[in-house]
Image (cartoon, rainbow, N blue to C red; front, side, top):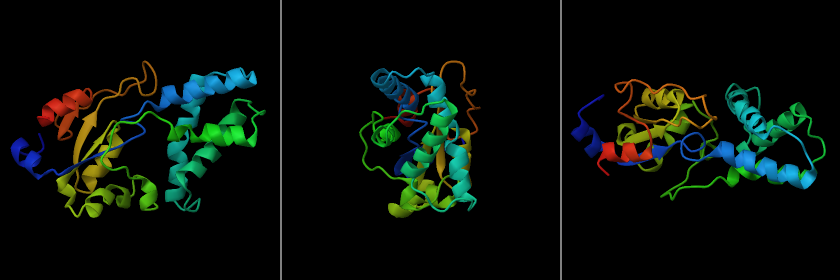
Length: 207
C-alpha cells in the first residue's frame, strides 16, 4: 500500500469515479441501440465494430480540444462529430437528422448507479488529463486533493490523478471493450487499491 491503510481511510472523504469506462456498460448500450436502429431502417452493419470505432476516436477528439486545435466543445457536440465520422466509415448514409441526434444521445441513456453527485469535465471546460478535471472534486467540496480518491478502470487516468495529489483505486473491467481485449491487472503496489470489481473494492475499504 502507498501509505498506512488506517491513516489513509480516515483521511479520504470522497470517492470520485470515472464513469464511461468504469461504471457503465457503454459498449453493450451502443450496440443494442445500433441494432434497434438497424432493424427500423433495414441497415446491415457490424455494430460491435461500430461501437468500438466510435469510442476509439473519443480520446483523439478531446486531445484536439486540449491542444487548442479545436475550440472548447461540449462533449455532446464532440460525440456528434465522432458519430458523423463513424457513420461515414461504415457507409451508413440514410439516417435523418432526428435519428442522428437521437443515436448520438445514447451516451445519456447508459444505465446508471445511484450517485450523491454527478460532475462533468464540462464544469471546468477542460478534458482529461488537464489538472482542472482532477482538482474539480477537491475544490468543489473544499477538500485537499489527498482527501479524495479517484476510482477508475484506466491506468492513465489514475496516474494523472496521482500527479495532482489524489489517492487512487484501480477497478478491473475485463469486458469493457469486449472479450479478449482487457489490459492486465496492475501490480498491487502501483495504486492505493487494486480490485477485480466494485464489490472487492468495497470489501477492501471495509464497506
